[in-house]
Length: 150
Image (cartoon, rainbow, N blue to C red; front, side, top):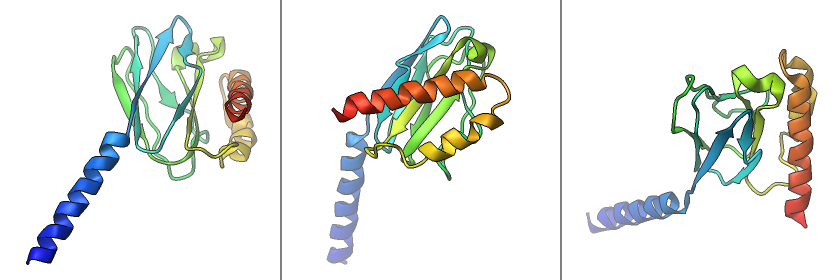
């Protein structure tokens, strides 16, 4: 019985230590831009969307890592949060403002480039509205990755 209690206590401490390592990041909706445009996170981190009056956030279909869970907030949902679990790049938008450039990127993990970069580039043509803005965001994400690598 004692070994079982020790194992349970150790696993509880391990889970607690992982949860304390997770960070919360904020993305601000500023006029028709996301600040920061490119956010770097680790698996298990939380991303909270703030100043959302007149905005929503939605993962763009085909623009997140395979097996990752997409999201969609409601308009004006202040403090809407997601937890990013899968490594790779996530491209998201504000539906009312995608054509004015309100597209952002979250890069999860240390891989440079993200493992799903080729998939993102291949799927740009499938984005029905704002494809040029998605392409621009991916370009800016690549520049941010280059800067981070230096």
